[in-house]
Image (cartoon, rainbow, N blue to C red; front, side, top):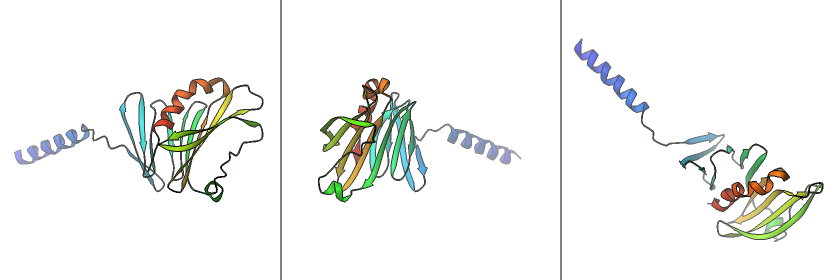
Amino acid sequence: MKKYILTLLILILTVFSLGCINNNNNNQTSGNLTYHITDKDPNKKNYEDNEISFDYPSFWNLSGGKHSVSLFNGKKQVTIEKSVLNAVFKSGNVFSTVPPPQEVVSNEIIKVDGLNSQKIVHKSKVDSEPSRIEINVNKSGRLFKIYCYAPPAEFNNAQTEFNLIINSLKLK
């Protein structure tokens, strides 16, 4: 009888101790995609899959998929599209698809993961402030697009959060 009690006690302690161990394995799966989220810094989290990695504010929400990753906080949103490079981009004729009520505020070349990238800032024709950023990045024959959106009244304040994501983006 003592043998069974001792075995039961060891089993209970083993199960309890395994439940108390944090192995920091935050792998998540969405369809065929497995990605990893870490939060070593209380102000930001890190997203990583087999194609991209980036930091984002810890208070933002994330939705990962095979072809894109979307982040959002209230009405602010960032989407990173992972797509195959198309013929228009290969020819050097990169252009933004501006929705009809939008106009281009600026169009410049910036560095994303050390690569020259096109950054286009848009605004609605009815608002005086910008509301959308589109960034095109070509890495090894693949076109990655980053879209950042915030309502015009929040756009300038959202730049710090957008820049955390853009400046930490690594393309594999």
